[in-house]
Each structure stands twice: as structure tokens, then as C-alpha cells.
Amino acid sequence: MGSFDVPLEGERAQVEAFVEEYRGVFDAALEGLSEEQVRRRLVPSATTLLGLVKHVTWMQRVWFEECVGGRSRAELGVVGSADESYRVDSGDTISSVVAAHREACVTARGVVAGVSLDDVVTGHRMGPRTLRWVYLQVLRELAHHCGHVDILREQVLAGVGELG
Image (cartoon, rainbow, N blue to C red):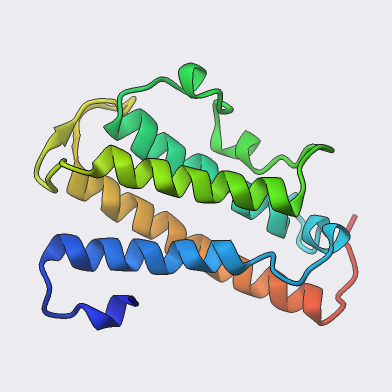
């Protein structure tokens, strides 16, 4: 179900539909590409398609598992900063990164089950937030990075050369 299929549903259903739609973009971002293509650096920053999927995976784990679920980054075994989350290691593959993203999404759905949008969660480093605020932050991040994925994928498919 797409985000436009639930216009008269409750707020929670609408928010979750948008989150799921954007998650789907990242699930499909690497389809049909080679390991070399997803690692290709096409912008001055170190951002790559593979790195973007790793970053949104990290971001969702931080917001849902840390902020809502109350588990520390050390407990989660994730890097400490957003900048580090883009880093692609030699062991990262399309398969492993997509699987990690899908697993993070499943875990996030479980963490928020039974939590209302107005419930205050206390795992954020800067203080309490409502689940609504967390969802809006995640939507902002996913939407922001969907544009990056679209552009990088277009460049890869067009055969644009690597920078630096």
C-alpha cells in the first residue's frame, strides 16, 4: 500500500505508509547493479549508493532501537556518528547491506508496535521525544536521502565516471 492509498486513514497509518514507501526506495536502490557500481564515488563527498543504504539503516536503528527502544549504540553494535555510518567496508556487499536494511526495518516495526504517537520516549541523547517526533525525523531523513539515491543511481546507470 502506497502513501496515497491511505488519505482518510488515521495519522499513524498515514505516517507509517510514507515510511514504508521510502523504505521501499532503499530496498530497490541497489537492484540490478554490480558491486562496483554501488561503490562508485560520483560526488565530492565519500557518498556512494551502498553507503547511503548503510546510512539509512544506521539512522533507523538509532531512531527506533536507541531512541524508542532505549538501547545504547554500543549495545546495538552500531557506529557512533552519522558520518561513520556511510563508510563502506571490504566485507560489505549488496546482499549484506540490503539484508541489514530489511532487518532494521523489521526490528523498527516491532519496537514501535504498541507505542502511541503521543508516547514520550527517552532514549534520545538530547532528551525526551514523542514517537510522532521520531517518525517525522525519520521521514525527513528518508525523504532527503531518497533524492540522493535517485540521483546517484541515475548517474551510475548513465555510466558517469568516478571522482577522486
